[in-house]
Image 1 (tube, rainbow, N blue to C red):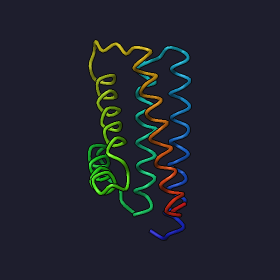
Image 2 (tube, rainbow, N blue to C red):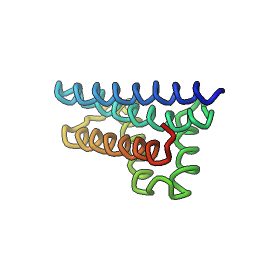
Image 3 (tube, one colour):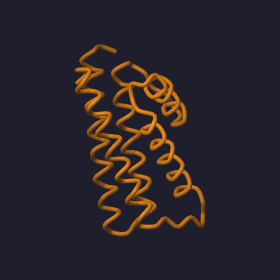
Image 4 (cartoon, rainbow, N blue to C red):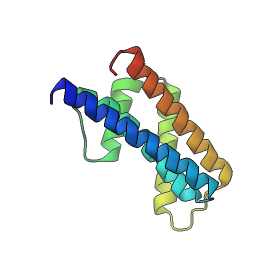
Amino acid sequence: MQDERKIDLCRYRLGNSADSLKVAQDCLEKEYYKDAINRSYYAVFYAIKSVLALEGKDFKRHKDVIAYFNQTYVASGVISKEVGRKIGRLQQKREKSDYDDFYLASKEETLEQIVNASEIIEVIKEYLKRDRLL
């Protein structure tokens, strides 16, 4: 993939990230907590994929995307281990809220996930700006 196309894909995915975060916030306001958790996870997932777009990397499975990001960026210290832990919690909460039939998400934990998602996305944006990748 040409560099310009990689940058376009990166920006597109960052736009998806922003949209998903906004939907998560809207769902929180309307008390659709499980949906808000889902969208906050996806906001981070798209932000992570925006970084991978610049490398020309893509994976079919979520766990492979997260594992590659953790190995390449978190384990190497480019992105903090705390961010890596927050990504893991977002992923766990999303899986519980999507797949556990009787899972009831609270307003507090939903808000925490949205705040974590916002922080992670900002770290990723700062990384892209700092390293002049965007």
